[in-house]
Image 1 (cartoon, rainbow, N blue to C red):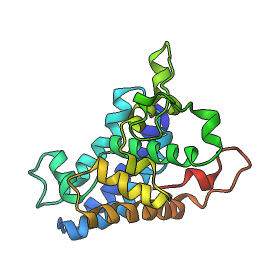
Image 2: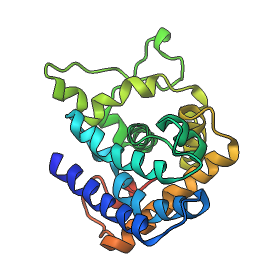
Image 3: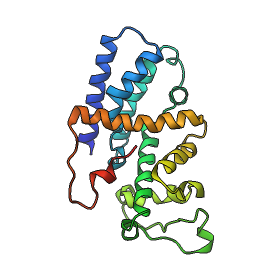
Image 4: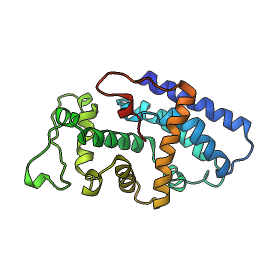
Length: 223
C-alpha cells in the first residue's frame, strides 16, 4: 500500500507542478478547476480501498492537497481546514471515510451485506435502525480491514442516511452529515465532482473492464 500511495502522490505532484509552471494566475476560478480535473483524480480515485497503516502514507497525499489549496492567492494565508471549507472540499481522510460508508450502504442494500456484516437486534442498539455488531480483532491491522474499520462510523450515522431509498440520496445526506458547514449547493457540487474524478481518471488510465468477481467495477465506482 505504501508503494501505491507514493505513486499516486508522485503523479499528483507532477500534475500540480505542471499547473504551477504553466499558469501564472493564482485565482481560485483558475486553479481550482484544474486541480479538480488534473490532480484530484490521482489522490481520491477509489481511496476507500486504501487501508493506510502508516502515518506517512496518510500524510503524503494530504500534503499534495495542502500545497494545491495554498496556491490560491486568496486562501494561501488561511489554515488548511479553512481552505477546505472555502473550497467545499473534504480532507482525504474524510473522503476515505465517505467512500467506506457509501460502499457499506451498497452492500447492506443487497444480499451481499448479510454475508459480510452482522446486524444487531438489541433494542438499545437500534438508534438508526441499521446498526451492526462490531467484531473483535487481536492485531491493530485487523481494525484497518474494511468490514471492521467502518462499523463504528456507520452505527453513528443518523437514520435519514441509512434509510435512504437510493444511493444518490444517501450521498447527499451523508455529505450533509460529514460537512455540516457546507451549503446545500456545495454538497451537490461535491457529488458532481466525484463523477468528474472518475471520468478524468479514465481519460488517464482507460476505462476499467468488468470482472466476474463478487466486487464488480459497477459496485466499486462511486463518488
